[in-house]
Amino acid sequence: MPTESGSWSAARQTKQKRKSNSLTLKRTNSSEQDRPSLQRDLLEGQDSKLPSSVRNTLMDLFGQIEREFENLYIENLELRREIDTLNERLAVEGQTIDGAELNKGQMKTKASHSTSQLSQKLKTTYKASTSKIVSSFKTTTSRAICQLVKEYVGHRDGLWDVGVTRTQPVVLGTASADHTALLWSIETGKCLTKYVGHAGSVNSIKFHPTDQIALTASGDQTAHIWRYVVQLPTPQPTADTSISGEEEVEFSDKDELDQDGDISSDCPTVRVPITSLKSHQGVVIAADWLVGGKQAVTASWDRTANLYDVETSELVHSLTGHDQELTHCCTHPTQRLVVTSSRDTTFRLWDFRDPSIHSVNVFQGHTDTVTSAVFTVGDNVVSGSDDRTVKVWDLKNMRSPIATIRTDSAVNRINVSVGQRIIALPHDNRQVRLFDMSGVRLARLPRSNRQGHRRMVCCTVWSEDHPTCNLFSCGFDRQAIGWNINIPALLQEK
Image 1 (tube, rainbow, N blue to C red):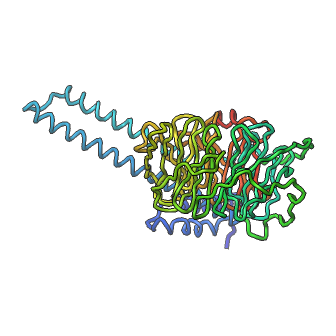
Image 2: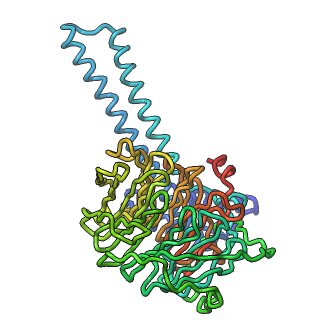
Image 3: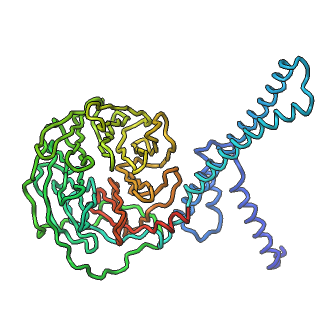
């Protein structure tokens, strides 16, 4: 039997390989669920140096891209049918009005006008959808834009909340399920003060606008106001812990850092609060200062929010109306406005600007628990939910959101930067994403096998003026993380 020459054999193998590759791109009549598995089966026989896990991931991503463009194609067909229907309707209406057929010039003018409107709608829809696709599959965030600077480790249980002082010296505060709140040196990561006055999980921490006073909410059904005095240590040079990519690695419990050692044991300890706010019949999940710092508001699982006078600890108003447990409360930075969120899928805006009138507005924009709702410096409210969406609202017209951000995981306590108006979203899936107020994704904070959160991220907070870290996050992995975000580079990349 004759043998094939080397060149002929190589050409034949190339042709077979090309044919095999073309089969992977050919559309099949199978269901959408079977398509990825069929593609993997077709790839199994191919010669590839890629690991099977990497190839499977690539096929999943390609499948998502294909589905996105398939949806765009269907939308385009629908819009084209609308154009054709409108043209037909214009022709009929023209005959009725004029009693005769429109001349070609009139018909062309009306049809052209309607077509241009729908064409513009088509372009807008296509542009928005494709931008969403590009954003979803955005390349890794460069090391120069998002950089992990410091990890704050010392709690013995998960962290619910993180805050930054509004006065000098600027320090970081964390609230934990281990019944403590800790204050940290941002530069060195050293624990400065430990508050142990609560008998339950510490669920939130907020700092007074002008004094060295903290407000903490707890599962012991109280909120405490306590004073702290800190002295910052001299910063020591640290090794570069920046991130060069977004290597995705799945973690298990055994991979978690050994954090049983309590490095906060030698911190100065505060044991007794200045004031204890006691009017709730359930867990106090959050608390915040009203503008000026003379009043404080608390949110509880007893379905109410309470407004207190700080000096006397007296209850000023009980804010009732939510049908289920409250999840968060937030105050406006410059006005006497309060927003509360709840598991009843709503958030409520309470107005205390007029002492004689205390109005409330209810907003129903989500389909699941509203985990947080926060004010911006302008006239906006941003709400996040377990329904995997974040919505931006205009206070002047709250009937519908002006922007909707759709994600792939439940959203926890969000935070908006004052200066740049960038929204930081902490997720159940351990990720932190950054968006602008129009809903465009700017970045995803890197997560690798050694850096980033290993459990659910519960909260984020911006620190506008700190030179080292300007974003902090905390989660169930018992740590807080300080990030440096190159805002100019981030906005330029957008």
